[in-house]
Length: 333
Image 1 (cartoon, rainbow, N blue to C red):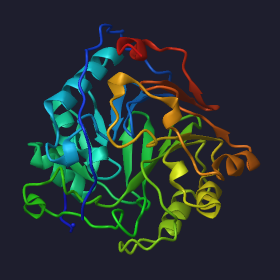
Image 2 (image 1 turned 60 degrees about the horizontal axis):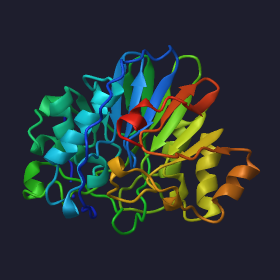
Image 3 (image 1 turned 30 degrees about the vertical axis):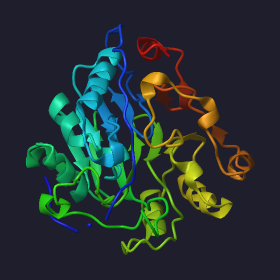
Image 4 (image 1 turned 180 degrees about the vertical axis):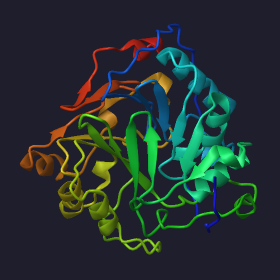
């Protein structure tokens, strides 16, 4: 459910389609205390815990400059992913921020799958503009927790990349603020990262964008304090997200000091509107010159995604890439 707030804008895009997957594997039960993660491009992930399936972000459509919003082609891609993974429904959709390349399909995907959406006021405005009933979107904020099966997702407000320009904070309160252009002009609404903690000790910090913790984006947030409060007496075994967005070794170190991760999985390095059906070009990946040396100095493992629909298992020992490539095969990758 939503409670009101305020406004900004987003970015660009382009489209794709393709052949549907031919294989439909049976749904596998995830071992207790573990999670399975499947990369769906940019920062959208399928997260499976116990018998539940969640989406982190919902970006399947590739609207040109966001004008089209959620598209039939995007929902066809979602259907094909569910078929390939053996899932018939999605239990929840958590949207980290409301720019189109993270949340454009939140409402449409929830209607398609039966999911409950979790996000900022702006995310709920977007979802409702796609026809989702108001009680199907839960407004969440810094410090809130969301149950994901036997796991808990603790939410932390963090800054958006380029926080002084397109990442400057603003949000919508109602669909009227959107002026009928919810998909193309959405402000980010406040970035929410999430610390996932499972019984048995496995933990992961998900973040879909990043800037220095001391940046002033007009939100009034003390981001360093937010992170320190969330990670007092805690750590994240895995940092999953846009760590490579750090603009300096000092900025990266701020996060590493707070999170204390053993592994880092970069995301959002494959462009704004990738054609996931066509596959990933490894040469797309780029990172700051200091990135690997800072991680190596702390003995942190860099885990590089190799292809779309790659699957990882999160355990008490960390995250491992699975040999199971059934979803990739279903898409011909």
